Length: 144
Image 1: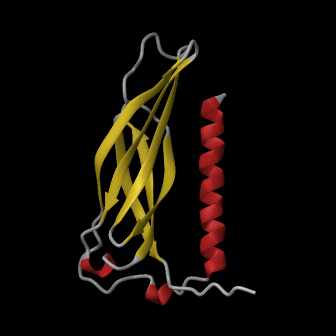
Image 2 (image 1 turned 60 degrees about the vertical axis):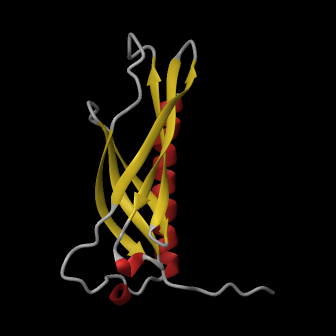
């Protein structure tokens, strides 16, 4: 049951981000930095620990750091879209990370049902693929 909740949450989060971007009305001409190379991102400092061991499941949670050293993004806010896959599994999920001034965090979570696994499979090993990014433009919040 928890695995289905995570999948629904992933789709819900992705739709919220898409709606947010559409409402933001990003100007596509300012989205791309004029560079000869594509921007580079790193995912590092991955830390995953078993969060729970119940009669029915094992749950692992952790964090990773999303970094860009690209000088154009050291004073910028970005939404970075990426695919996340666990080695040995077919399922991929789409994720969004927020990067501010060149650094951001990724929250990690994986559920293993004891009906699917005879023993604890251990912490998941993730593989990531960057899909793209959007640079957020400054906006003003008016208070009434």
